[in-house]
Amino acid sequence: MKQNLTAERDILRPDGDTSCPRTASPEDVYPLSLHRLQIYRVQAFEAFPGLRHAIFTRHHGFSQSPFHSLNFSVSVGDEDQTVQQNFRHACQSLAVRPEQTVSTRLVHGAAVLSVESLSSEHFIGEADSLITATPDLYLFMRFGDCAPLLFFDPIRRAVGLAHAGWRGTMQNVAGATVKQMVTQYGCHPADIIAVIGPAIGPCCYEVGQDVIDAVHQTFGSAEGLLSFRSGKGHLAHLDLEAANAQQLTAAGLQQIIRSGLCTACRRDEFFSHRAEKGRTGRFGVLIGVDRT
Image (cartoon, rainbow, N blue to C red; front, side):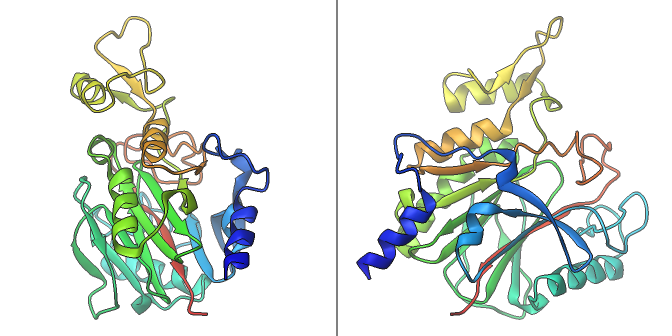
């Protein structure tokens, strides 16, 4: 068994450098056409058979404007029947049955729910993070500017999925997820691969004094997180990706992949609540491990 674990670790860090987190190039989160759906996949995850994942784009669904077309949320005003059709279509593309998925009602916090078994309810509780080590159970969430955080521990074969908006980030939902994976499944932070998916970037995420104050209170220093533009001293641009990367590093992770995809800039591929002034949909993210 020890030889197998060593082999897996070598795959994750082929350069042998553990001195700092690995920040992947954008090519490591790459686009792919899958059964007529356009999705993004994580190159580092491809080394592990049975790890099923996808970051869906907004394309090739059934919703009409302004939710066109692969919208996964009914809370934005789309038709429930159409959203369910989109969801079935997405699940089918990954050979996952909808009843094998679990989601939660997002509340912009840092609560983490451990999912141990499937039930008749697709939604469980209110939280912004789900974790599981149960095979054939797939975590699913919806996003529209907040950062998707995907977690995988290949040693314990545990996964996590978190929703990190600015409020959840200030409550350290990233660190809370890692802590629960350690507590619930015996994971070691150094074994966990974390991916920060498409989210609104610092180029487009202008925030006010309440967020500026929260960043200083949470992180102490805002260096690398806030940038101020000339003539707008009361406003700043927040780097949500960098903030979550800092928290993942503080939690002990050594394998952090940043997609570098801005949802506001890439409205051709993703929904953006802010850039589209609230009249838009939500894209989805799914992750889980097959039964071996």
